[in-house]
Length: 347
Ligand code: NCD
Ligand code: ZN
Image (cartoon, rainbow, N blue to C red):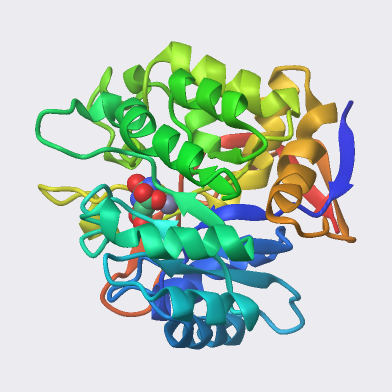
């Protein structure tokens, strides 16, 4: 198969930031994706219905003329989030979901949840109104190895939460381990999981085995080859509980290369093409549409996109970077300079 047409994909986990970085980064998502879940970890975070309405307006204003991309907004959950505001935002069509970051688990998560008892009223309300909870599933503590954070979070937090709130729809985001993959399958359809393009391609030897490659540093960290293979098997299976979420997360070069470097990979310019390559390598192109365009909307109770995109087997060279007006200057692109064997040729 050298050419494939699928329903227009959606990105169920995306960072575009704000201001100049957003203006530089957003067009790469908006050109191929119908919708995206916009992550709320701005500085300061998108915490209320009012914050999310204003952020949505800024995103819409940054879209190229004529583009029909739809941003789906999320609420950054804190110990003090108001259930009433969450419900209002959901009913007014501002919020699609609520995002739970355990405090200090990742970039801009300092305002995240420190005390899980305090978010119970919000979770109860979400279960009642049918609103999806998106989770950065890592337990962070000095005594937990960084490679075990996903597994420990599942045991200590996620499994009990799913049992206590059986009507709550949840997404475990950016799955990074075989344990995570298996847990999602066991808890579907209450639970779904997104998978990034880079967790499908990289293992920790790629990241650290031949020089430290800061552009492969992200949260959750890249894990073993056996984890990567489990992720690939899950994504390319077409099973309804696994769907596309790029976690494309631009950072300035200065922030990525600092002594304490920022976590996150900017992959939107090569995302759908990279997924197509992975599915093709595994002989599973026939499952790409389920993963990229059907399973996500079904989990969120939304209709799939009506438009289509067409990809073709055709070499092209990924751009190295995006230029950003202002002090952030530029952000390097995942796979920049590499030859990519699949290309979007039509919408
Ligand atoms: C993300 C970011 O940069 O905002 N970073 C990352 O390593 N994935 C946050 C996140 O999703 O964890
Ligand atoms: Zn993310």
